[in-house]
Image (cartoon, rainbow, N blue to C red; front, top):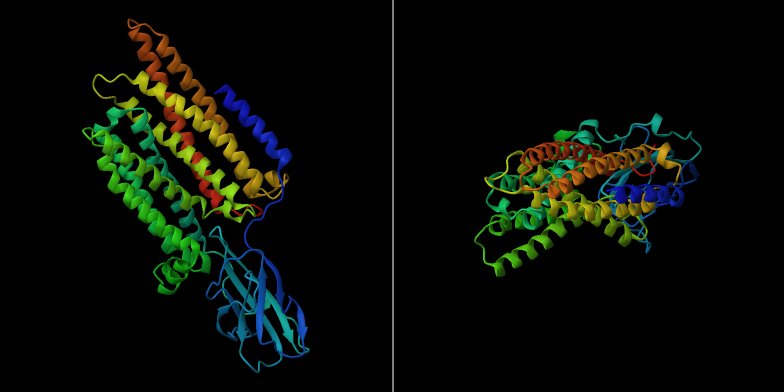
Length: 442
């Protein structure tokens, strides 16, 4: 693990020296009329050009007068050939006065971006959002907290499912261990439940509504129209297939031909589950999406295999099967963990390089501070994992008669793995916070 720590230190320095500006959430590039424009006559429509093509989102643009009455008519549409430009028509014959344009778009990474701008028809005063009746432009605090909690639980579910690699590759005896099987089943159930929760929460989250709006059919339809909603349905279908595969894959008497087939199917469905996370987060805001999404897939997949294996290892160390030798199990997992740690470090550095807006944002923004905390937690995990690895190697060197030494080493290994599991939980919580924090946010 010393090499992994050195690699992490090198990549952190590379991040600080090589961070380049990257896009965050969708932004307004221009508008017609412009913010603060004074017009001699009311325009037929209001149009905005965005920094990315997010499609036509119903209800994303609204125009109100001084009394807060809506003066736009018809749905949001694409007024020209530019895919990033959307607009809404205004009612004909609008009187002179000040008008406020409210917009609420959902970025490709599923996060809402809201704001306002104003224009004047005639010679009257310009009234900004502070002086007009307008809809809420912020996310409801309870919905925001609930969404963050759901994301963390979704990550936990994927991590529990990641323990399947440990069962297949490191501890075949776990196929008949009810506790190990329950953890995998719990992981599949948790991913399914959180997927449904994320789907119903997205509408209120994007519209700035409270929890009472979770079953608003209009908001549910809006979520289904965007890529985020479709990817959530794909996640639900993939985890349902994986849940059906688990009891078959874990049968100890399964023929080798069927076992290989089920393992391949598990890899494919697991990849689809991971893809739905990577394709709905910050990586999709990268102009070169392929690199960031691929790095995120590797990053999250390696975390799931490592942390999921740690939970399964902690389980069998706490109460091993009768007559089971845990040293070979821990040794096999130690090799897998070393590869996973390297993948996590490299892919994490690539992600940060592609997503961080600038070097200074590491210490001047909430997103940057969360990244530093995550790196610090990961480094601490490596230190504890290094101790676990030394214990395993020492156990291998102990002769069969050294029962007392083996028992003491086993106790130390249990303690180290328990600490690793706790630290992994904290790192997952930081990852959940990162997904709901804009890279360029303060």
